[in-house]
Length: 283
Image (cartoon, rainbow, N blue to C red; front, side, top):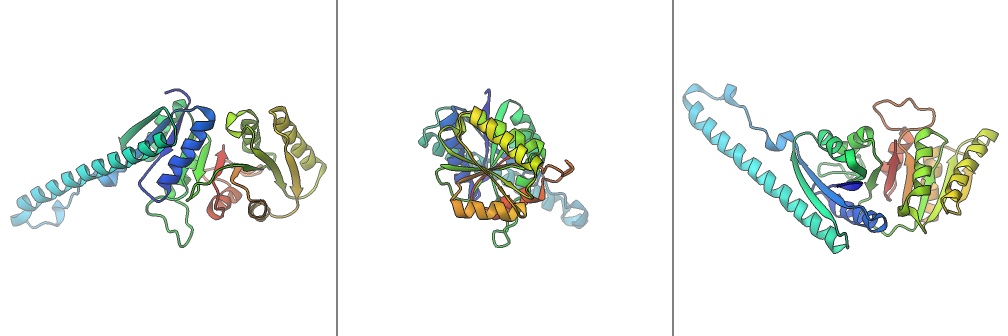
């Protein structure tokens, strides 16, 4: 499929939301959706306990362990297909015409890297099955995808809600400029209430950068309100999201002055962790 949207589903609480947001994106852009469920190596690997089994019992127990491994692998396959079938039904119910499903074995990043070659973006839940909701820990898979993917990553919130108000957190960096350009050009954002926010110290350079981003959005048909608010970015953004009833936060994965390393920006991480709305990330 060309220019498809990849939706990663794992059977967690977030899978329904991932499907609903993927359906929303597909409905506004006409993109086909490819559902992807990856069975990790732990779910399909065989156990090797031969070194801890006494010689006399080894043959019988190894045969039994082998049978259990085969059963576990078959159950994982069945569960994966069931997850994909449910997700496909949800998307078709939402009106998505072109939906495909893929069940893969192996490493998640390898599977996503292969699938995203001809994709426009990825939708993934903020947390997976093993996430600690009480401590608001982010899912390790989400963080791995956000670091590694070359395409925009849409991090779905736990519960879907219609998107009307969009906030772009802008810092003048390369990834933030890419986000602005995408919003200006994409039919996904047509007719939505787009707002532009820059947090930090007032300066001629900062004001010029903000006005340049606003001009880019205007050229794309968006009459956008732009604000430069003093304060720490994570606090300013969180307060704006809450106060203005924002439905979607758009931001760069890396800050303007941050070295592009193996870690996404600290502000980005905090926004994904604390905001109860989806976050669309750009590298």
